[in-house]
Length: 287
Length: 172
Image (cartoon, rainbow over all chains, first blue to last red; front, side, top):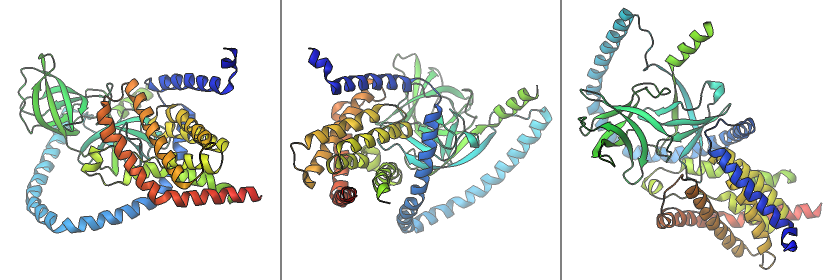
């Protein structure tokens, strides 16, 4: 038995296992990144950026060749959509102006909808693919903070999981995380509010839960962020209703939401900073 | 120049994993099968065989910590696994012949071990609820397949490079 304890390697192994468990426990907590981690992330981010640029250039060339093959078909379709778009554009302009005028009338300057966009480029992805996360090249120095919404032109894709000084990690909506909840509503004659909780991998759909049982929801209705969660602005498109089913216990309804954005094919993202938080912050500082 | 060859190779292997996943065309194949490139692990196994045990373990520890900090944000998982795998491979080499094919086989073996180990931890902390059969079908076999392709294409030049580095060091 004493021989067993004298085996240095075995002791080392056991100590490392204890450290491993402790470290996993530490990183599972809801936490901000410590400064050594931030430093390591930023340094690696810089190296990644150097390697990423030429690699993307080569990959982009092949993608372009692929695109050219589909150009004719796409062009035809887009031309048909163009006229539709012009009428919509004029409508939006008049509505926007009217909205501004009415707001001025009410003397209500801030809205949950307004946000400051921060453009960012994807420089890496989690290669082991247990968690779908991407690394982008903007960090706290550019105004990114934890839990901010991340969108592409198509719609919401995720939120900032951790921000270090010059890079940040984005957790995609498809990640399995119990803590990842987004307050959302279904757009209709009467808006129905619920929470996005989780992702169904088989159907590739987000789950919108906690909807009142008597709510009227139809297929193809749009689902947007409500801005009531405290971090996201209002009105970011999440997706559209795929199917409505009763919840596990039958007390509430659950909606399968087909995401508007493609979670996989992401090159550039926009990190969304709510304007209302900024004005509130300024006011507090002024006090 | 000679001094920097090995760290440079390690960094290239490490960064290329992430870039590979990022630039892979996002088609049905990507969405359905979760293949993970394990280029760095292959590099590590080859280093353990052709350069030496201590160096491989140190590289494993440093890049394991990097892997945890930068990619997974779950500290300790890879920092523990990489040095251990390097150690086991180096010990196994005492009875095995350092032939290229044996090195390839050992790399594949360690990739499978690593995948199982990470799967176990993810299951334990509740980040995944993938059943074992699905894990084998959607994750383990595509990962092995991808890395077999990598091994066939690039492991021989990698081995030659490492042998060259070792030889230059011994001449000094």
